[in-house]
Length: 84
Length: 156
Image 1 (cartoon, rainbow over the protein chains, first blue to last red):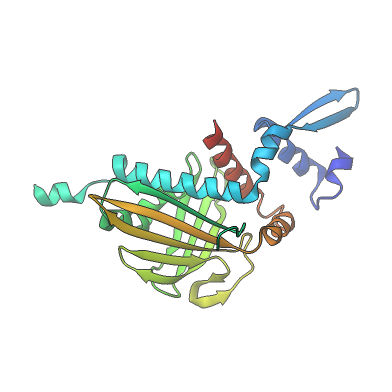
Image 2 (cartoon, rainbow over the protein chains, first blue to last red):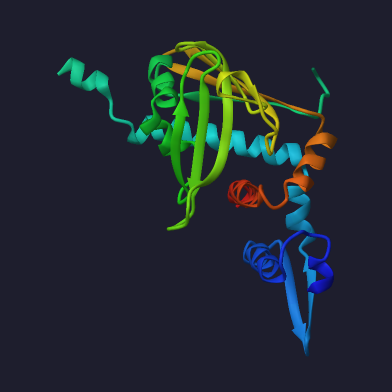
């Protein structure tokens, strides 16, 4: 863990917290044998996230989808009030 | 530019006229409902929709403190038709070093009884963006994770 944390300018506890997030998202897996914990990257999940522009595109697409959902289902319709 | 790997365009049809879609964008209480995926909470701090006007949103997960999300400046506003903002400037055209430099050009076109909603997003080169990504590892962690989760969510 110390080896993995070394290049990052944060303490070991914060680093471990970040790793737990990655692990809970399925991006990495880890196994502890004795005092040594070894991490593997889930290459499939990472490859999907690796396409940086693809991730940005997905973000903007999801944002447009949420806007559409919000307008079409949740947003109060003023026109109805006008008509009434 | 075709083949430019630092630019993206997405479009979708929304079943409401441009006036309604514009309202969902330009009203803080509406924007907060869709700008960030649930359960992450969004707070709209600035939404001054005129050229040079500030745009700032914060995000919060659970009971934590609000974290930076987007800080930018509007460049162009044509009500019910087009808005442009960038993250390389803040309110009043002040240059800033964003976590992710981008300019977003959003257009609202009437199509039948609805709206063709298009986002064209310009970045620096993908290489620059990656570099920035690594530099902003700590500051951008929350954003990166939420972007990643949003991405992964869509893959399911």
